[in-house]
Amino acid sequence: MLTILHGENIVASRNFLSSLINQAQNKKLPTIRLTSGDFQIDNLVSALEPDLFGQKKLIILDDFQKFSPQSQKEIAKVIKKNPSQSQIIIWANKKMPAKTLNLFPQKQDRLFKPDNLVFTFLDSLSPDNKEKCLKLLNQALDREETGLVFYLLVGRVEDLIIAKTGHQDQLKKAPWQKSRLSAQAQKFSLSQLKKFLKGLIALDYQQKNGQLFCSLEFGLELLILKL
Image 1 (cartoon, rainbow, N blue to C red):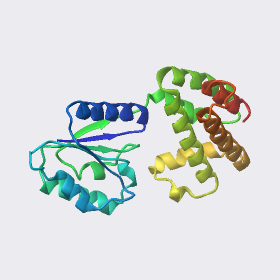
Image 2: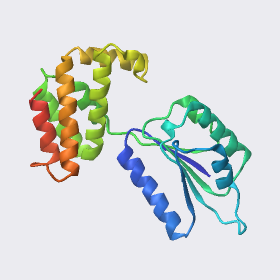
Image 3: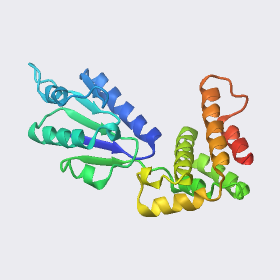
Image 4: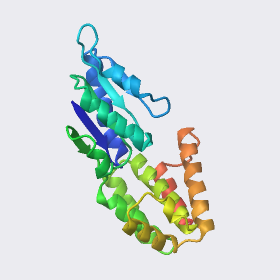
């Protein structure tokens, strides 16, 4: 059985993946995790082969978005040619495009989407819109995990820097998304965006090392106020 877990709500999808791993461990099933860094297609072929006792396995293809398009096609071919009773999980930290999903006709597709309010907050971000932005931030934090909002905010600022520097071709987005990012980037100076990103990186470091003097939520509010 093949299950694809994908979408920007990585907190929810990771929690779900952890639950599947815990279930496999409780059943004493071997867990095999394959990543793009050291991936060889033979490793997947070997993982799909039944052992001497016919024991099922949990096979995880982690961070699937990092696999090359060619590797993704090879993986799909191997899974099609090697039906297995094992549980196969493909995990990606963003929504997978239809052309990738279509490589796997026999699958359970689970898309983890953040609440739309998070994207409304991200779209509102600009130096001249602080009051509304802060209000939307707090509403978003009521709906979703702080870590997810923070992760998506960092990604948005990085995209805005790319758009601001005129490298829209590097954005892996639909044309309408690139257009909206370019329009939003015009509301900032490049120095404002870089300073904001540095502030987010510092906030993340301090939070992870126990050096943050306030909550992460309040730290985000302060950074927005300083825009």
